[in-house]
Image 1 (spheres, rainbow, N blue to C red):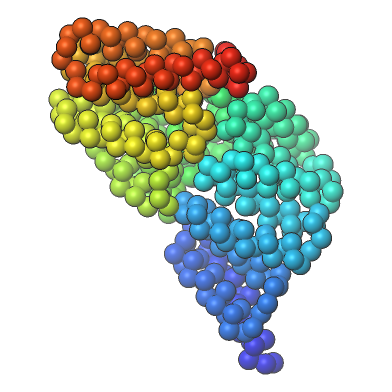
Image 2 (cartoon, rainbow, N blue to C red):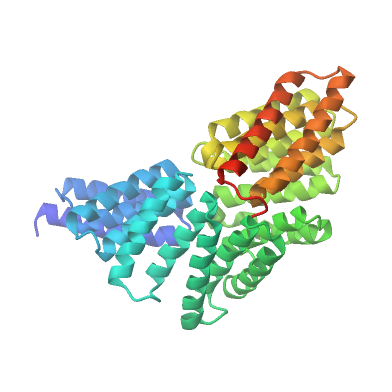
Length: 440
């Protein structure tokens, strides 16, 4: 065997080892193995080849799990380009590469590109695989997830209901694979403004995951966190507190596969529950831990906006107004930098900017609780896409601003009032143009 062949064989073995390490949650070891595999291919003179593309795809999956989205997109793009050079456009491997790249792009908020790749994957799998094949159903689920974020909720629901029927026919109603569809339908109904239906699907998902993977598995924890957020949004503090107690376990945060994003989201839930209960010190500690967890993310991420915003609220209620103002302004700058990634359109960005301005101003008003309540409700409505409710909340928040203007004690009032008015105008224009349907 030649030296080149020996190096290539070493690379193939390292690639398989790296993928196994990734699946076990040994991310640093997996990264070293996959990088070394690519280096061996280079040393062995391996050109475009199936094994090189597969190694790049495995590396892309690892980088996504580490929330290193820019790198995961780069690796996934290189793999897909290689698949295109090696195989016909409707080949299974092309579809697999397009599917993984679509999920990476979705995580990075590049929804237009993500949809294009998801449709490419679905077309490949439709041509090559039977209707109930897992890869075909996964491509439909990815497309549905993207459509949720783009506001095409009815298409998303139709895709997921079709997926669910196909998977239940093969795996029954309690299979681990079916849990993915329950999670997706929960997301659809939350976006449609039906939190009760969303909770029903999350509870079904959670039952399957606890039975099949255990109570401390990252997927189970993710379902718990989503349920806790919905319970808080519905004002069910005791239910949210009970869920938080299940999340706040040493075994949960010790799991290496929890990852920085899930870890941050779990800490945010614990902080919000503590804040709702009036325990400001505990809330601040959880948001500080959330910030340390988010530091491991690949650059800015939407969760960083929420961490800054929630931390600002805690500091405001502790009377640390200068620190609170800094945090809320930081949240606003993050939202501005990520406006397409966080909310997807200018209307939601304007609403968020207005909400933060209201919070900043309300620190110096006797209307503090009313302003913060309106702001929190506006965020909840924004997450559900209920545009009529958003406009009503903006108007009520603007009344708080006007009351503050009469008091003559506010810093930056004119600018904040202008942002609130801009948000109202943008929302109204969106409704008139048909981009946003009232009450959907």
